[in-house]
Image 1 (cartoon, rainbow, N blue to C red):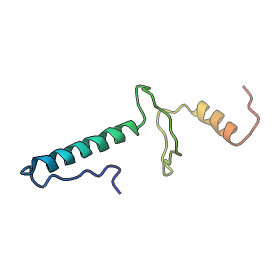
Image 2: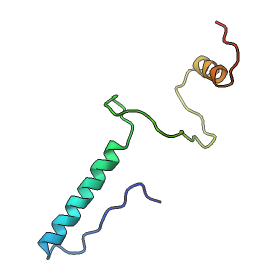
Image 3: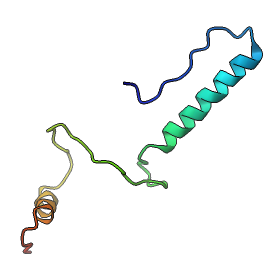
Image 4: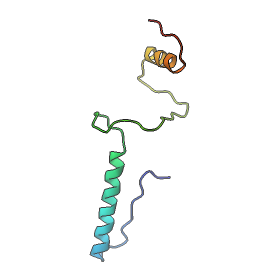
Length: 80
């Protein structure tokens, strides 16, 4: 299923319906953009759902940090 479904413009003959479709599409695009994570840290920039990597690795994630995170998540004693 698509994350964003826009209304197709069949004709520009009826100006009012074409403008309504364009404005509705613009509002949907704006909402979709606001619903993404920002790479530059612009707010809001929090995840509100789990990230499913489908058993794939996260690259450029330091293994020491991963071990630390694993210990935190599994409630193991953390030693330096």
